[in-house]
Image (cartoon, rainbow over all chains, first blue to last red):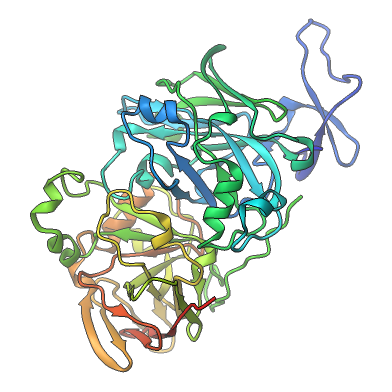
Length: 264
Length: 236
């Protein structure tokens, strides 16, 4: 099952893809995608504000978890997963805007498979790890490399900026994704495919990551693991539309906005 | 929908009345901590002192209260005690000015930012700092203007004392911060918004005391009380 959280007409709703019919297909031939709220209302996807599709707990992100991406950044892969943590201020939903500071030279998206914890996990062996996965969503985890410093890499100024971790559109139940180890990921900048990978190339797979993390920290419901990004990151500019998509999880849209919108 | 059940445990008498559960620490913001690295700061892999504040996150699984037992992992002889002043954010803080920064602080608490000792600050594993129970906070939140004595606490003039089994092992002062509180809040909120109930640790002094299984750690900070925890070897 695919579920979203959206704000519409004064409340926050659970919403679902509309399977049959399309009440909002406009007559001009441009097809608007509609969704259905839990209370039965059918609305166009651009009439709602999309929120991250679940209540997010601790955010754990993987660096260099695709071998080719590590090469791209001239870094060697490690014996142990490179995990960093992120705060809730970074979160953003589908169709949101992410700010690009005027004075930077290299800001890039990262299309990633996000794994959401259901049943709390404490010292879970690999063989049982997948039982703790509630579901998946698409993530786009921006970085601004201009701010990279060699202390506690990647430092929060690079990876924990407001609105730089986009999640959605849908939370997809684990049961609907029989093989999360074989999903195609793609990112598009203004319609052009710039990043392409497959989760089969993860250096550390999902079960390993849950075993590893839960060996020293208890994972709770709503905690999320961003499993890393494949090669193919390019600079993005204000006005650019970035779409990240993963097989079976949907397409996550984000637009880059400029400082002037924020009074800077 | 998933429902989060992990909630912070400390309530207090001024807005926002409870902690959010987000705790951030600031690396190398005590002058002694930066000085202790000496010339290595300018050599690889660091190639220079931090320019902007370098923060880290103590996730919700690390939160603990005064009186809680802290477990020392197997094959780890000692842990580092990171005695630290924590600012409790009172209002949404985005791009605050240095002069107004304190208006965004609801109060203060004591934070013990516990670590498995590690020598490199380049890309340390989160397993050194993010283990269950590795961030006792408390014993309470003391409002910035404690109404009982009409005295406003100056966060840049506090003495932080650490005791192991009752013996004073470290004395540090928040007067020696690289970025004093106002400047720290200005520089952090330039790139990330802090929310009511978030905690920002202002920085740990050099030569963090080490604690072994069976010992008790007490941290006291002027006017903020005493944070006390027992450390026990994890045998499971």
